[in-house]
Length: 362
Image 1 (cartoon, one colour):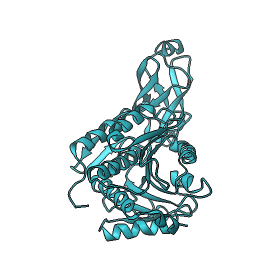
Image 2 (cartoon, rainbow, N blue to C red):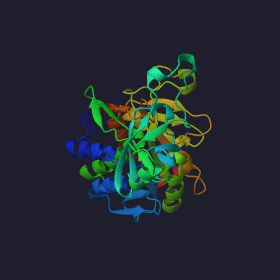
Image 3 (spheres, helix red, strand yellow):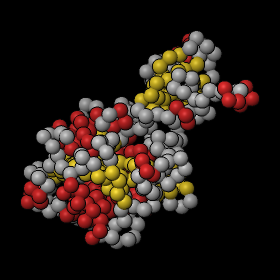
């Protein structure tokens, strides 16, 4: 691949549309429709399952199967309790951060459409210094402008309605992509771009490629656990996000040293198959793609773990995109890293040439 930018106007328009669409855990289908519509020209067929994971397949009749995967869902909240005076208390749907909630506007998803609300918080004038309470899961609340439970319910809001943040995509200082849900719809975007490049460069793969956008990662890798049993892959390359540890209040001794703008992050972990990881690092070096390394003690905490330990063991590896401010509404990544993850996956696939290569991973 050349050093020229591989992202074009169409792909960037897709990224913005895809990120701006709400796709909370368990409700990913609208985002999956956007993703599949973009991917359709570049694949031969699709696989979907009952919970919404989507797979674009190239060479579906091939004997050997390679997965490249990201996850489609974003963190959110559920309506858990509505008070008599019309305030709403919530529980998490995924790892939603209660500390960023106060003063955030929210979208409550109902059968009647979106109902606007906001996380209220007592004014600073009414709080008492050292004794003031910080935001906690049991004291944050949503106000949607109602004064009774009945008024809330007339809006279509009930226990179980899912709640998302409306914050949308923008570019900061020319080359930083910012939005909620970059974790990990950036992954779905990057694997779709790999498929586009294979198509546009007329690359014929001697194996089946399964471009997989899994659901429900944020609540325990559930979508990956299901779809890997359907695909039964021979090899899986997963992409997710990891922390940029260069910002304040992050301890590199425990979190590692990875930075936005310095390239994809390749993981070392029990679930990461060594020969596949070495193929990826060798590919990066041969193609002069910058990369970083990260170690995980027991589990990667990503869909890599689900693929690796399925079907009697699937050689799996993890390529991560360094990200600032994970699980907030201002998640930030560097455009160069996005492009380099795409390049690294693309070039690695071209290294997997024939059936003999698959025996190498055993």
